[in-house]
Amino acid sequence: MLDIKHLTTGYGSHVITHEINATLMPGELTSLLGSNGVGKSTLLRTLSTFLPPLSGEIVLQGKALGSLSASELSRLIGVVLTERPDVQNMTVRDMVSMGRSPYTGFWGRLTPKDEQYVTEAMKLAGITQLEHRMINTLSDGERQKVMIAKVLSQQTPVILLDEPTAFLDFPSKIEMMRLLRRLAHEMQKIIFLSTHDVEMALRLSDRLWIMHPGEVVIGKPAELSQNGELTRFIQVDGVRFDPVLMSYRILM
Picture (cartoon, rainbow, N blue to C red):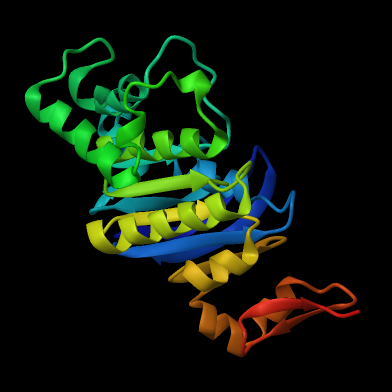
């Protein structure tokens, strides 16, 4: 499990979230919700070690992430960011194979075992049929699946994703969230993602983090429904949260 202890995030002297204490569990899909500008990306980048915490620590498998080398971290945490990969002359298999670089080095030769991990990752992500396609010919949804496969080939116990359903059409959003939920449950991975797709997060996440200015509220969707946090999350005239349907309704 990944333990977050007294974590304060921000930039320089600017504090965004203060004293977060939480645990991310294997086998769970956890979604981070919050309005634009509230600090979701800062929190995610801090958990990814791209940004240092202002205070506190993040511990995985008994080791503080701040004490690990980049090579050690790359074998523990896989990250999928919002930015679309802008590459030319690279096949899908080549891109997914890059997930093995923590074990082979950037220019290292893949062993038969590495090739097996790449093949299995593409199968899990449902992109085997795209193996020989060039990355720049793929749709947004296909590219997102390729990046998921790349991080799966990395064989990390933790996967962190920033807006993995951004740029996708509605059917692709559902497919992506179902894939991530299945990977968490079947492979016992810790999967943590930020998203604006509130209703899908409510229906498919095992746990939610709701981010307000300066604080994060954590719980299972049903718990957050019962204690009023999901109602508090969207305080807009004409919008109501229905705890029975677990969805928001726009009042006409």
